[in-house]
Amino acid sequence: MSAAIVRNWSFGLFRRHESNPILTPQPDTFYSKAIYNPCVLLQDSTYHLLFRAEAEGDPCSGRIGLAHSQNGMHFTIEPEPILVPEHEYEAQGCEDPRLVCFGDTYVLTYVGKNFRYGEGHICLATSTVLRRWL
Image (spheres, one colour):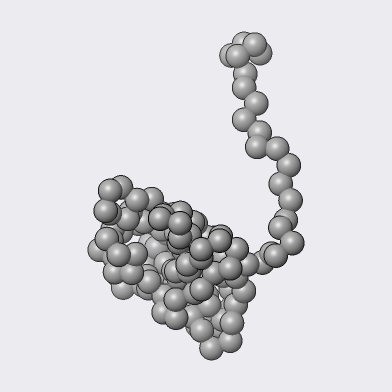
């Protein structure tokens, strides 16, 4: 490739916002140990944030939680996870959500962990309400 057509795709410098972290683990919740690997979808002036959650003392604690915000900084976390391990291929957890919306359908990809089958599998689920997934 000629140097003349190489593009710089750099986004520039990143810096932490003074309000970080915006979500933190809370005792006696499904996210009592950790919250991480989020994705965000802005829809009708509301930020919907999906995140990987882990609970203290639960060896199979990978869950996906949902939080909402009107300003993208102050989120309210729903009290129950929206996706939990149900199938053998995700027996050790549901992790690392990524979300898009096509028309009225939300499409979620995530990692289903089952060490018997290897580290993890890319999984796909759909919903029309962000809470019940097929």
